[in-house]
Amino acid sequence: MRRRQFIAGLGSVAWSRMARAQAERTRSVGVLMGWAENDPEARVWLSGFTQGLSELGWVDGRNLRMDVRWVPGNVEQMRTFAKELVDLQPDVILANSTPVTAALHRATRTVPIVFVIVSDPVGEGFIESVPRPGGNITGFVHNEPSLGGRWTELLMEIAPGIKRISAMFNPDTAPYVQSYYLPSIEAAAQSFRVMPNAAPVHGDAEIEMAVKSLGREPRGGLLVMPDNFMDIHRARIISLASENHVPAVYQIPIFVRDGGLLSYGTDFRDLFHRSASYVDRILRGAKPADLPVQLPVKFVMAVNLKTAKALGLDVPPSFLLRADEVIE
Image (cartoon, rainbow, N blue to C red; front, side):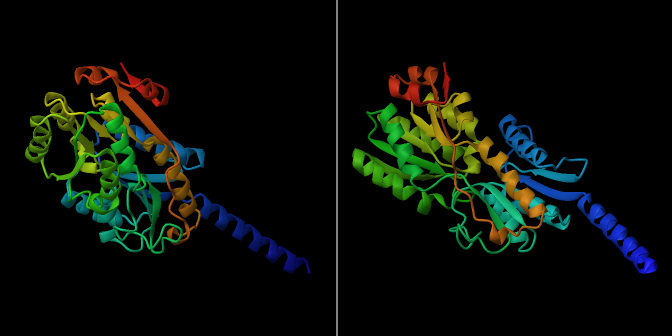
């Protein structure tokens, strides 16, 4: 009897040690960021993600190894880095932006992927549906289609004399814009009796042409669409809008801090912080197919009074009351 108890005790100790060793095993997380490594805003977002992981017990260098790749806007390079990360066989990969997620989706159908800052994951074929993603991908949508109409309304409110609006995007990095955002932009434009226009661009020359065409005729306004390419080229876009006296609405506050007029959209810092919860659940055994895609919950507005003054615009008091950030 004692011998059986002793053997059972040994088995219990061995199992305990094995379970503890498994629990303490260093896990691997890949991160593919669709921004430049020296971009301060993108580094703040990534910091929010690592902070979220730390709050859940995952610390890089202790029980976690994090491999990060940065790739600003080049689709082919995204595919190269996506393959590099997949070849490392991480437990999960965090994907930032639609083209980055597309590159990873092309590289693997088995490694779990959590995306952030993606507009239309169903339309892009990343998931089967929002409540039931299926496959190996889930994540956090950053905008709903109706936001296109909201940007149009805000532009008309801050610059009420506008008669035509251009929605600028790169169809290579943001193919979803046509079907996802333009219908609500067109509906809102019709209600304000202004002419909407899609302005696809692929580089600096086409960006310049699109903005200058708005400036040549009075009362032109610009909507800079949610697009990784637009974000990376924000300095040139902001400069051209200022030089050509074109009121513009953007989706993230960094544009306004850098001299843009107005922004409204999801709080990216919040999204990155929240994304850590899904990475944590996958590291603990959950499958992406069983984790519903999450919708945005926190939005922020920023307005630049100096830019408004340079454009000859009077910012309504209601803007100042609603704005989360006012640049003077």
